[in-house]
Length: 260
Image 1 (cartoon, helix red, strand yellow):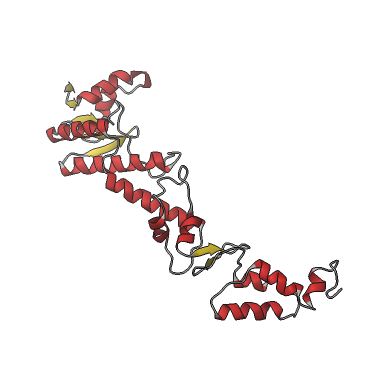
Image 2: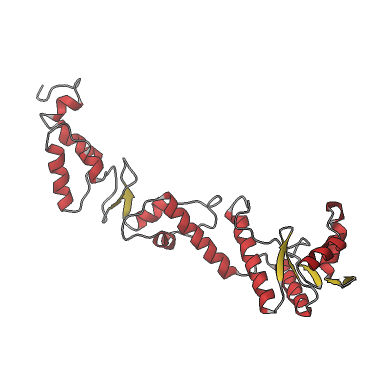
């Protein structure tokens, strides 16, 4: 432990000062920061690689969840460990620093550094929770799920929890299919298939948009399926209109006349 006047340092802080002199952060400046926080000591936590442990910044730029989540987990766990030991912490230069005048802090800092040297995450359970929450948030932002289906339902049937919105594959369609849903071929609405193939099925609204003028062939067909909780297909709609004396000449004005 090094002491400058009334401020004590842990060994890692002293080592950082030696390596970071070119950036202007010396022991004297660390001591000044400590006094500004009314501390009698200044300690820096080793992240297991010989670099200061990064503090989590909610609005920081981490590129993707793969980088942000471990930083957040390790920062939360580190602050919690120091708090449990009765040691004050603070953020300086984007790092977690602590009052090295408190003897309890030294064992906490050493324990964290040893753990991170062997394994890069301090709390796997917390990391899993963050990955799950992020996956749910991403699904909710990308898909308008049908009533009765939650993002959690999709994740449970996925092969694994997507751990990053940038780096993970998102087979939400496959997950919805395993729950018995497919999307309307004309819009994003989810249709409950109840065991029959999705093929080119469309929702009721999209099907009704195929109506030509006041002709009732499409609305009548759609209503009959609606009562059975079935969905029409684009090919069925096309065939109905091909057989309709009103719709055929409108939809296929250059086609061969029926019966010719």
